Image 1 (cartoon, rainbow, N blue to C red):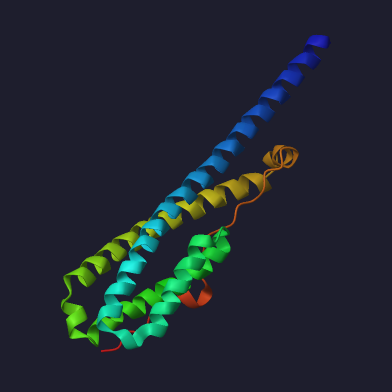
Image 2 (image 1 turned 180 degrees about the vertical axis):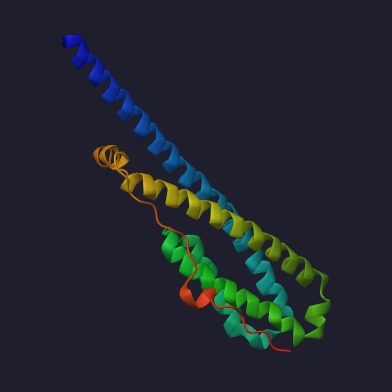
Length: 181
């Protein structure tokens, strides 16, 4: 009889260890995915001052937009919450888009090699950021699902695993852009 109890305890302990390790793996995947987003955001944030300086040299009366881009960059660098950072980054993306539209109004800016290079670099960063966001949100989904599903939730509650925040676009940002001929 004692060996049956010992066997059951060993199986339950093994089961608990297996679930705990699976939760740790998911939590670490979220942390790694967030690190990937952070790398891309840092690359973007490093390009923004150069873009602002380049545009300012050609379009000084766009100072309000340039100042707002600079302010949002500072807020984004200081933000630690994925949800808040997502809102800030969405606004920053829209303003950067407006800066790139300025090239149509300023032929000298359009001809600037530096501006063209910055635009290409930012497009590359945006593409990498898109992939990093998808991966991060998938990792968050997997972790949160494990934390909420039985029997994993038993171990998750004992060891205080908490759900991670998704990094998402705001509703207004999801609308398709209008294209004018």
